[in-house]
Image 1 (cartoon, one colour):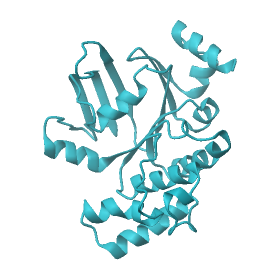
Image 2: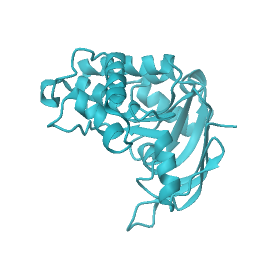
Image 3: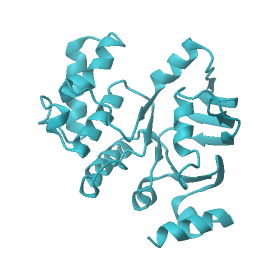
Image 4: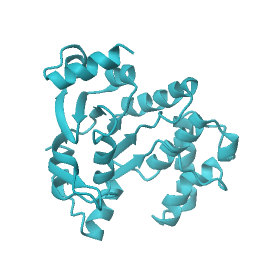
Length: 247
């Protein structure tokens, strides 16, 4: 049974009649790292937003370990959000809180977990993302790469089963990208199930179990990185890959 199964998912932004997702079907196994690539506006980030309920689907289904997510039910959506966590390209940290405060606020205030255990876990997570010495630092004292790593630790503090990463390096200066990618490599080595939207093609090739290419709201090709990058089967994928590999 797939860890995450998406079937015939369609979605439209409110006030429009043009679908941004068109019959998207995708399966992700436990511990698998699936990267979504494709041109801007192809539906990659939208798919992640639909999965966590930020944009309701028009039709189709999402199942986590076989359990259907009902996006019209608050209870079902809460259960899904307990199992999924998303990290956006903008860090969205609380500026008046330290790194420790940003990582612990949701487990304590939303989950009601005990502070000593939460803080101990937050310290472990900050160390995992390479920020063991930044517990007391505020966001404006951190680089963009460090802030993004705090955002990743914050997502992990809720103990998700599946981590969704939406262009987490696109807002960073080039020299800071590597430290965030190194953090994702650590999570991959730990067996975290991840669905990643990225334009960092070298990283995608290295870390992915499978690569999924999207265009105009649909999946046009899926396969191992070597296939998608070296021998794409569809004309659209060949055009896209040849263009990005020239730059």
